[in-house]
Length: 85
Image (cartoon, rainbow, N blue to C red; front, side, top):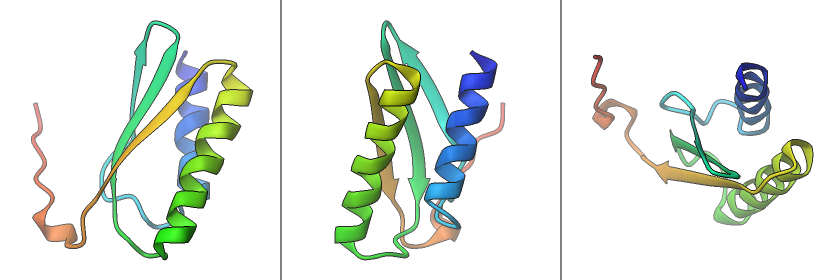
């Protein structure tokens, strides 16, 4: 599982280069992998939807289970609130 999570994070950081404002959170529920993160809008909407579909499809094929990306867009990086536990 650790290797898969590391692969998911590296793949997404390479595909969505310089767009992540937060850590990439990988959640597993039954047979589904859900990935959550906060991104900044550096590309057009059309390219963002392409990257979303491409990432979900490629990760689903490689991991052999459904993958759902849950991305939230934040325009101002300073307004992201972090809570360290």
